[in-house]
Length: 187
Image 1 (tube, rainbow, N blue to C red):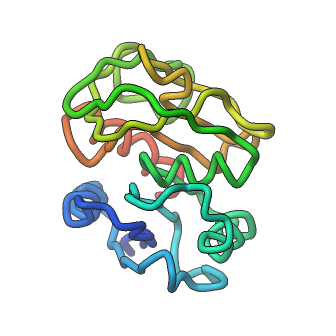
Image 2 (image 1 turned 30 degrees about the horizontal axis):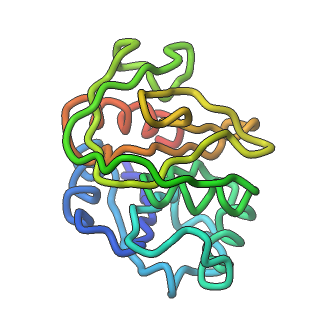
């Protein structure tokens, strides 16, 4: 059986190794590229795209234009994690706001009818390391999970192809199980 391939876009995360390990643990091979060198097309080479977190502000639309072009033209599932979700949301017209610094495990409520959450309970504990929060789902998206400071803890495009998580899912058991739900969309 051929293993699926996931393109992991490194937006400057501190946890690239852990992120790739999670997808490899779930049965996918991964290839990592920096945001500045994403391919123009996936051309059947990858079954999914994952955008890592970032230290760079998501509002740099010029820098992220090739990445957004790839995501919007690829016909594969996409998952943005932390800053990766923020990049996707800002490109779609979403707004971020400063909030309290959160580092560590925090509870979030998820919409369990979503395939992404097949393997978790309605309340999950996920790992946070950030101070920016998406305030509302932009046009073409909806919030599918929320927490105390993040009204959009999880995001899904209306067509179900693009997902996002404010949390770093490469950490904690619930994070792995959410990634398992995403892997079911492309494997």
